[in-house]
Image 1 (cartoon, rainbow, N blue to C red):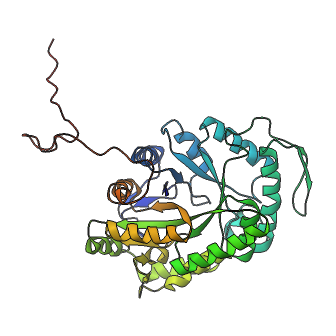
Image 2: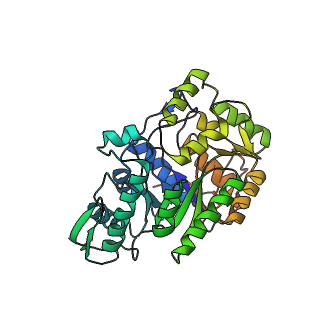
Image 3: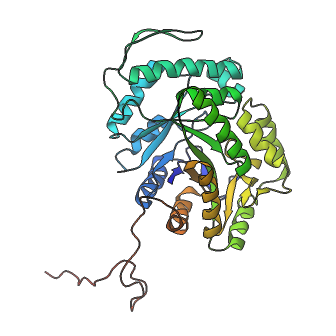
Length: 379
């Protein structure tokens, strides 16, 4: 399994839907999370995109030197960015990071935000732009000189002079549930992402995308985006889930759901349909809890339980074809440690942090990982 974590550039805290114990997003805190993810053995981090977030490209660039192995999954935005300028940004970041860049293709799902960025296209038109964008983007990063005239985009003699480290380009990740999104994924991307729907729904989407990719003579990998609430016992885990939304009231839920209702994203519609804006029956599948989506857009479900149970649920998704899990938890710094310590020993993760060794119950308290006493220096 490839296990990724999340950089909360839109904010973090112990509770959803409130400013109580909320944490300021700054470089120091994001670097703490990135360093922790790197040291603990997470393969990469997803950086969200949108007007409610700090810019993903600048954040990723600022954290390259703070990490060693960690990969950065950053978004390109067709319709907002130029395909050739985006390709140069991709190549530069990949070169500076030593081949640690992954690309998340985001078409956008909020018409209000799109209008603020100067994009006045319908849902399907955005996917048509994305198709043209990726045709140019993939071509120039593969070393081609591209001349292209489409319905929305046109370039003449486009090229990238300094290629990325990864050939032909950094892998393309993409999530979308509509038919237009699945067709785009089948044609262009390397890994198709789904939000945390029930295993039956995920299996259906994987089968649909595989069929469409096969028509292009292509095969795709698959990933899933989930929150994780894991504790040593199931009782503790479910208590933590309820605690996470303790300060969420009905008015906050209603306001959030009105906002999500204006989106033209099929994925958001499917997330909202899991809970229907109600606190009743939030466990929509065994250990799959939709409480996060009451007030958070996008990924709105969490796997909840003790380590053995959560690991078993992840294996169920893996058996469907999922090989990449992009996880998150509140607050993200502490939960990165909790997930790595409780879950990683139960999962086929290639890289894990070294477990503490040596005398852990010394005469003066805990001496974690200090096997030998070092006498004080004397001049």
